Image 1 (cartoon, rainbow, N blue to C red):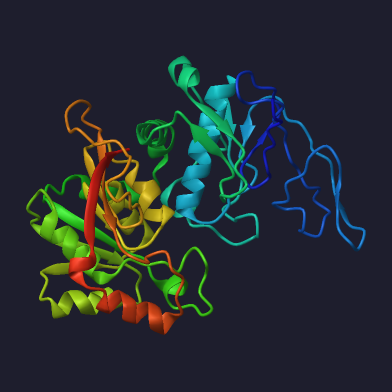
Image 2 (image 1 turned 90 degrees about the vertical axis):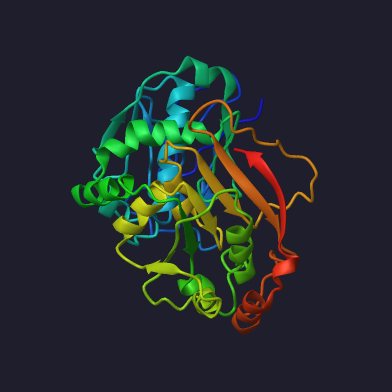
Length: 357
């Protein structure tokens, strides 16, 4: 069975797992290193650089699962916490220790502390049912460096609501209570922009955006009648689709408030359309215990595969309405990207299928 290694950026865990997780290791860089060891995946031997500098060997911790450093911003951080809880449940560990500061592994402040006031340690309940069907292993292709099988979105909702939601900061608690009292059938649109939108050369993962006509298709084809459209975007309000919506004479509101207010909106959005891949809206929407419909232009099946979603059963069921948008994955320079987003034809946005997640 393959050895499972845990990188510094996710968490330290010093146990031997049964089943699919074996010989998990804690990775720890000494306080005196020059920073290059932070985030380096190390095994049984030292990792050394051409100038002779080396990272220390792994250090095993046996009591609990430890999130060594935050990686990225709030969406990534929440996935880190959820995955650490999954590993604790799979390994029989009774606690998860969180980072003691609100800076990431590069020393950059992360806003996680604006929304949640975590204790140093979360006490974890054992879960034999989860342990019987789930497994997790290292996945170096993702920032949270963990891939889990047998895990569904409802598992994320369960652990986030049980272990994270009680630690909402006071400001966030008030904002989320206001969102919870909103009973409008509202389409919430997340328009991510910032440096992801206005960067040349483009970031290979962050520079892929849905065309504005995608949102037009969602509004036209949704199975419910929306009482309003709320667009959540960044304070500069420079996303090109805002102008597109105005030209179409849409009745919409723009929200560019605090991270807390925007985060609470995603936590309670029952209908959410995304214009770019973002763990901010994705992770926060997992807190919602109600039936949720997600509209996604980045999962095109062309009517092949995928599970058709029935709305009967558990009240927490989540459906994802997938759309096909030709060449949405192409990386474009800023000028070309904006032109493509504004001019992509509405009749080329094809609703594909509805999938249970």
